[in-house]
Image (cartoon, rainbow, N blue to C red; front, side):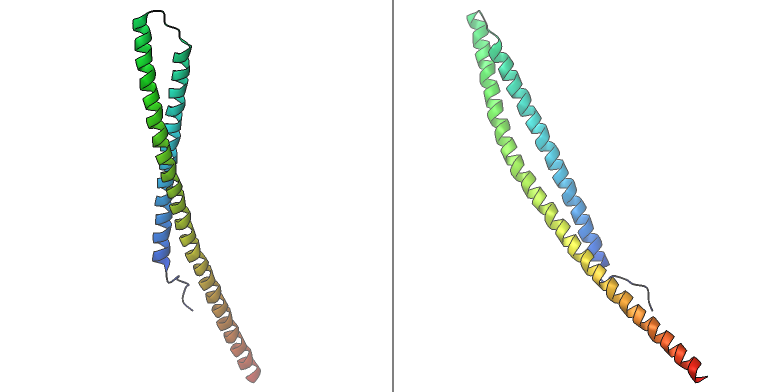
Length: 139
């Protein structure tokens, strides 16, 4: 009997590559999100530190106020970016899960075909053994 060859092996390989790509995209998106969250924490910390500083001159108070306004704008922009990135990360995760499911479906099909192949091979071997045994009895 011929060696087992899964009929959809190339499709399985393709699905595996798709899963790896989806995994890479998800990991990259998660890393970028973590970086943005770190930036947000730094901005918040900088704002808190600035709020603790008490300036004595009007010019320095004005500069401090402008810088505070800039920090607030950066906070809003970074928060919005994080929200968008979270949606992207969720989509990337869903794509990864879908790719993983598609690969697993083909792997299960491959396992099922292998079991069927092994069953057929065992039947064929048993048939040959029975035939050999019957020939011995006849001789």
